[in-house]
Amino acid sequence: METGHHTLNELFAQLGLGSDDTAIEDFLSRHHLAGEEKLAKAEFWSDSQRKFLHDAIVEDSDWCEVVDELDALLRH
Image: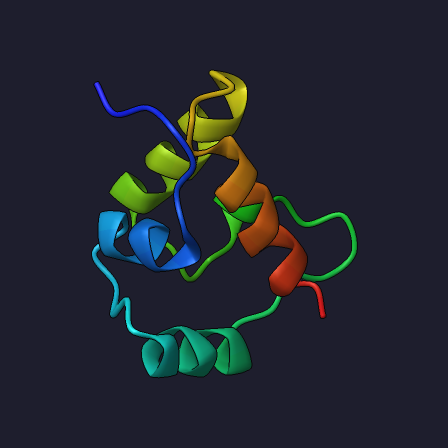
């Protein structure tokens, strides 16, 4: 089991997305969350990505901080 602090780049890789800075900036420019929309329920995730994001928060895993960071970035 992995422990410790994960980066945004590592989260994107874990989600099967492009994980270099340019790919992340592109993703963030194309996707946004509105109002009370839950991160894990956003329409742009696959089922497995939704499950990972949901579980990271619910289980308070070592991924939860960077998942929260992603949530905040998608709201700007």
